[in-house]
Image 1 (cartoon, helix red, strand yellow):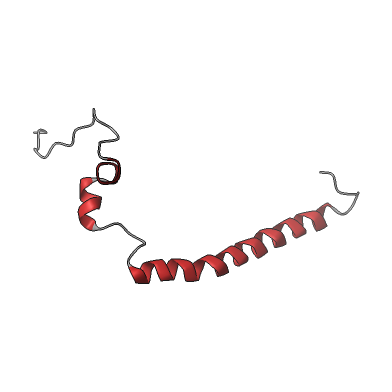
Image 2 (tube, one colour; image 1 turned 30 degrees about the vertical axis):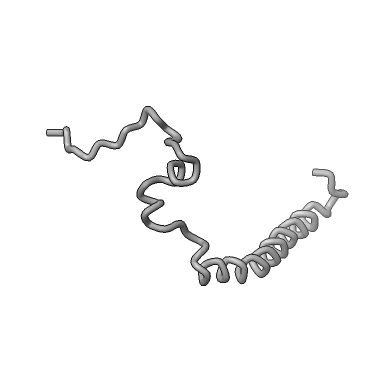
Length: 76
């Protein structure tokens, strides 16, 4: 790309090292945060709300009003 002649491999290696360092940094910072959320029960929504649908429980209406879930088996 824009590397001096013969140094393209070094730029590529630096980019890969940067990706790995950033991934490790974010993983190291966020892992305790998500473990704390899981331990406190705030990571997932309750099963009742999940069954009802998050759009109904959080926003008071269906996100897809034309989509109806049928509980009967109509295929023969």
